[in-house]
Length: 118
Image (tube, rainbow, N blue to C red; front, side, top):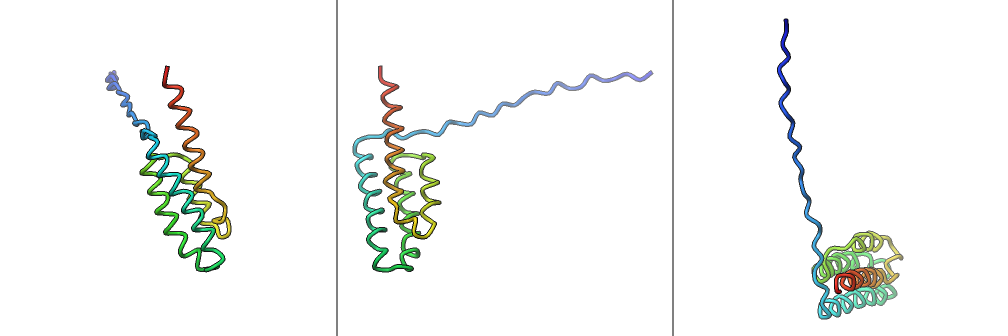
């Protein structure tokens, strides 16, 4: 007769993925982020009539720098990635998307700060 060996117990390995950390939204960081977002949007709008098609070559590095600096100042937020992708579309870059993204970020983080306080 055949004997069936007991199967080894399978241990479930649970991996915990750390939650993304939100940087403390201090008034200084928020002010600097607002200045950068508005400046980048104004520069893109101001460069377009002067450079026309060359503005796309000048705007892409500017968008990459803007996303990196805003990410550093306010932390990662989902609004930064779609904003960067939308800025890659010609003529849509004239819409103040960095300012809109920062408005979404600051609104959300201010709401989280208010709920934490008693």
